[in-house]
Length: 222
Image: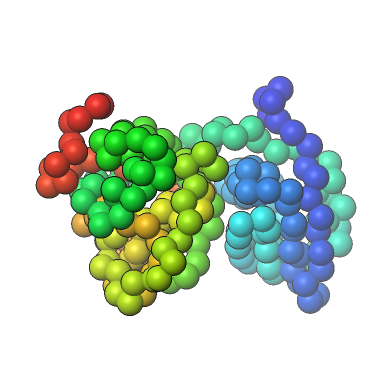
């Protein structure tokens, strides 16, 4: 671990006989804890666990042989610093042609071109998944660029739509109702049951967005 690692400060709560729900202080600490779980599992130093399911500020560990013993061991852990993951990033090409692009620009107090520049300059991480199969909640923009959901959700958002809500970016894997602010579209397939794994984005995955032709903003202010 590096000098910038920090001590684990979570609270482990029993869930049944074989699971723990670990509560963390915030999204950043949850991401660090989840990253350390994945690192230890890859290194073969994590006790056997059937499932690791992160959420906004919790991580569920299911299938533990000794939940109480594992909870005690957690008190000695140190968590990696933010951004210490070395896994390759998934690149998603986006046409920044979303119907809410102008509204997002107005809320940020910048031009539409600047929205594209900010969004493509950020490195995102899938914090957790939910809402629909293959839908990841991506962090990376920070609270400065948080936007509210639409007051009136759309009854049908096209598959591949890239949206913002609160501090998160998300990509709709299929057409569905939704209230996120839509800034673009990607042709990437987020969920494919014939693929292994079916989800293109899973918790912990690093993601970068790139602007492609068709949006009128590619190449500007870049």
